Image (cartoon, rainbow, N blue to C red; front, side, top):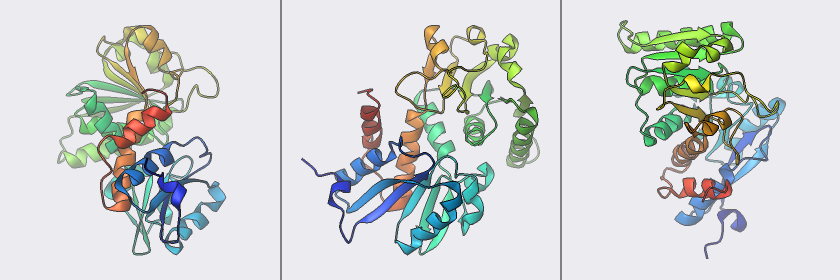
Length: 299
């Protein structure tokens, strides 16, 4: 039996981690350490509870401790932007960092969330070519959802948010992106709406995909009113949150027999991307996903 990497820490062990507040629930250490053990690498991955006021100190410790890199989760992804020596184009576009890579003592910020989501949606064979997508939320996770859907060819992206002005700011940012990408001839439309759009049957009926990019319902126990029954039969309901039980966003869709899935696959995909960024080698195919699904009780 292979000894888990985290159980054999030594003077040569290279340590990666995830910084968050809270972070105790994270399953990233299980995924990364399974890959380290399978590859026989003298590396380990930990979860560190880092509060916002200590983020700068924690990031400064990365080069000092010789850490290859760290992942960032709530609430640090936006705060870390100004603390990086360099940013990838994707991190700059998304205005968030979820991967910090130590390159000869300089911190490089990247973001793998959109790539992780896109890969998960493509694995489900979701066809967005020219179709509409509804994205609930305009905060931290929403830009990654917008970018992934645009890359998959969505013709219309409707951002639904409690505060319409915040949705407008996000819509304007990506309108500039698609205009620049298309040489000024953008064919995609990006709209900002209030949450009432989720009960507009005509809007919901046009959607090939409805993405929840908010933590709504996890604490309150409920989700915003949504006309689930109006969605096309092939519409996928996707929650960027992952949990052992169906989330309040997904439960009504499942009760109606609709396609629904959470963000566990996205987490596994972005974890694989982060692993390669930190270690310069890819993890064993499928191992990180299997480890995550086992921890969630799905295998």
